[in-house]
Image 1 (cartoon, rainbow, N blue to C red):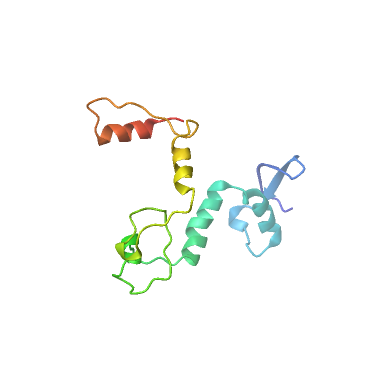
Image 2: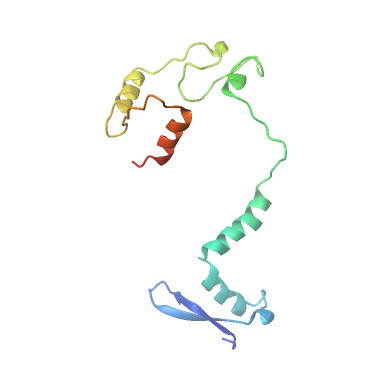
Length: 147
């Protein structure tokens, strides 16, 4: 390799440490494989470089963002407001479906499975709240809970 800078040790696939030499920055030629290959070996797994590459180059060039955002609730999508005919509606089983879709039809055994999970002490625990509880107190309990 050309005389340049010695970099931090790099661990090869065999587990051995090797020192990678790179050209000085002011002489770096990105079209020269002898310059680029050692830099690639040194930097290819650097988390900060990967993040920068994704956030500054890949995501902006591959993801189209719009300043206007469209949103709709299940009520709006499933009801008659937007569409007169609907072929299907997907979501969490709930009795909160738009009136136009009728009642939720659970599969046989769904209620029993939900009750089984909600009453399993390995999954759910309970705690008595003080008489002066409020929403903020419950949120603090949840936020500070450690399983």
